[in-house]
Length: 107
Length: 335
Image (cartoon, rainbow over all chains, first blue to last red):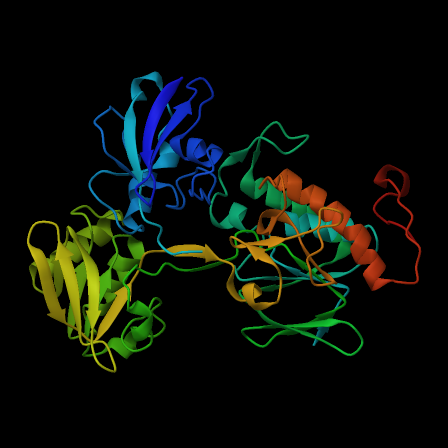
């Protein structure tokens, strides 16, 4: 079990407990905690509704071409932007700090 | 006008299997889909990805599942309208529905089944506060006629193939082409990237990377645009047209105005038969929502089977429906 520190779009801090033996992604963890992350495509790096900013410096899996391509179509993209669905949670990520990026458009 | 028993909106896996389930009850279907072919997301987005949770198939490619579903419903002769979007709905005096598409195809039936998946794919709009004020007044999300931009000053934003291809194409037509992209690298086809860079070298395209468009100015139409550069700060350019090309995003579309109860882009249904709050309209598959909803193809299939029972009663209020297994009756269904 690891902890993820997540700041939501209102600036509130949430500490999320995450198992590392279930192949969970950061997007799936957010959905499990009922945070406002849509994950429209289900985790295939096809939308950008799980867009997050990485605030701490844990080593994360490298970005795939698919992830880069989708971030090119997203907005509010920064140098620390990632798709939550492409970050599989592992023991090394304990204490990871992330922030939800703004939504492209409201519902 | 096309007349049928059931109008199905969408042609993804749930919509296709719905044709089978109502076909067993001898109900005819007409399907409408905004995409140019059947299969929905499976064909459009991930045709070559394997799916592992279709009962009876340890593994099946998305396009193969669509192919099989189309074969499975062949005996029921469904008809299709592709490339069109169901726009409006009206109720007739004989208690049927008339659905009209944006290309004025008119279909009449006593039952509508919405199996629209994520909705219609529409252009993604950049989050610039006043962008809607300039739509069709200098902001276009789709290039319909390139000649429209002859001798105009245009700015294209985006880093994919369509942004590259249109920048290259319009470099010979427009007076000035500016291409804005958030990174130095482009994800488009390699030869397109090289061609664009060549055009930038000879001054046919002004390339501004590490930048995003953040503001639009003008009185009655677009006159100038504000770009935020990662290092240089704010850049302003006078332009006639801004064409953001950031791909497509699914939207519920006109269905949102049909008087259905909607929760977060999904249609609320009764799990008894997946009926909506409007009698005669059902919603199945990824587009509906109810407590415990799972967006799985498998669940869409189940929903289609239950929907079919109630749809039959609406189409044939005087006929009695008895449930039969396909192993007993084949796919001829019931009398």
